[in-house]
Length: 212
Image (cartoon, rainbow, N blue to C red):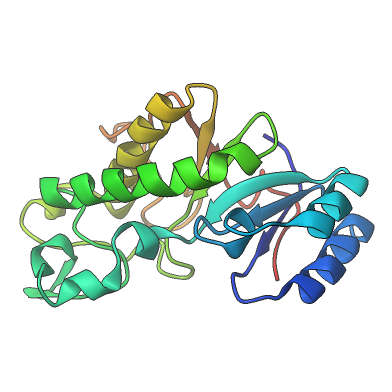
């Protein structure tokens, strides 16, 4: 979906956001993307929504939100959910996607977050589930995960959320970061394929992406 997206950080107040809406509309953006747990989806938005509609901006949800699906606070009691590096579990970035308990937690939390935000999105509804910024290739090195590249591990996690989204809204799409460069770029023979309700987005296809 060739939209010009501006990703909105969670810690901005309504006055700041009103200015952001005006700025986005005047600088070539046509879509605002709010984090899955953003207060935008929880509060009465009144004038803010009217302003978005005035500028005919699209609304999408998501971003670098894996920490919402596997909260870091779980690390103390559930270390097996998180990624391994040199034989030791690490709370960040990312997690252990081959652990069935990990994908179960992802599915449960994704269901809640998708359900809470989906009614606010512009049709066709687009969600985003992106890897941690700057850590796209840093995934798990446990014995099970070593059989998969970082890209494949990422897609395993994306697919877990995509399966949930398909049940909530079969017409919605889950956008993922399509690795197009670097040593771990997708290779034709890699076995883990994205679900049919996903949408690969790269920096090249997203000719105008911003974070504010």
